[in-house]
Length: 495
Image 1 (cartoon, rainbow, N blue to C red):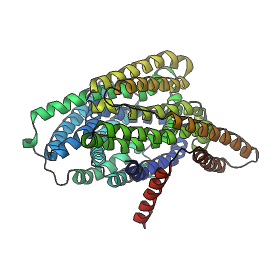
Image 2: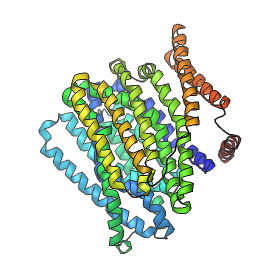
Image 3: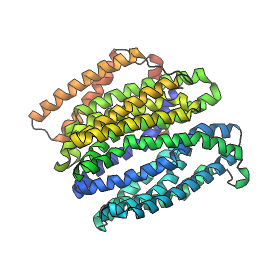
Image 4: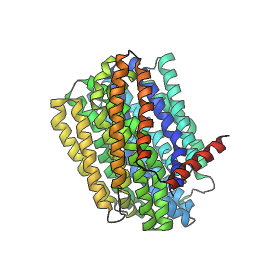
């Protein structure tokens, strides 16, 4: 199980690492092309797309990992694809129509630029939702290489086309959305064909009882994910209501830098873990699934804790490197946003029991409680303290969500942390953080350029961290051998 997890994790790395690198490349370009006010409007449009996905498809998307292994075991994939095609098509079309009607009714509340971006954001939601659901099925099918291919093609294709539209065709900030829309439109048919290959989609394969069961599983998750949108993204709108518009752009850029840094790790674990845990539960039962969950938690801590400490120590130089001067103040929220992303990932591991036990209502209730807590704090603190409060309250909301879901999941699936490993990780991470801090300041005094400072600090930090873990005996001999075997297999495959 350990070897398979590491292999799948490595296979998924390009699908998240390379797009994240692309994001770090695009951020300096976008922040020099657009002022914080304009970039803030773009952030609000993408937040609308995320919200529409949350209220329409997110619960059904989560249901893929719960039900695909079941239908596959019953040799009933025709039914699975017929049900999901019906569900997804109806909810996306209805949601898009309602969103456009809402925007038209409240047209007077939006500036011309923001209104235009929000309308394009609805179209982006329409196409991206179909694409997300199809790639979620690829994950459930454990087709990590195909998943990675489509993620890279759409991410890089969207970025390149967006820059062409903005720079050469002068489409303004709207071009950032149009580029991605065109790429999604081109690749949706190809993705659909690959995902459903060998299966038939027809109403005769749909059973009313199956529809009811999947809907009962999905709708509480949809409600909870709506609340999660409030926890993750509503702060942009609250900042826009009570603070200068420029703060939306400053906060959004800093949030994206920190979130993307840690989110690489979080999404890699979710991508690899979700199908593995569900398949383990269906095929091997509770005991083996709990062992797998403990193993995944330990690896997540080994990689996640130093990542958070590293981005926190180097917050200012990273923001300075990737943005222009109007955005520099955003470094103040980088550390708390990084910790928020870390707790979000830990929650995704700890809450597996609730999904396995189909306790989606309790799952959603926890999300709703955390979101209400977060939004209430935002409404009280943001008018007084500005965007910095938004970062702190986001962290508070995620810690509350983690506590609620980790406790409730124990009934269905016991989740454990190795405290010996946690102590080793904290010792190694603390030493790494201190070394990076003093090394960076020393290099600055020598007059070295910012990008070289960061590269040297990153290299030294990684070597020091894993060196200390090695000295503390964190990895046993069998694990070292399995990791080496995976990398040798991948190298031979590449050759």
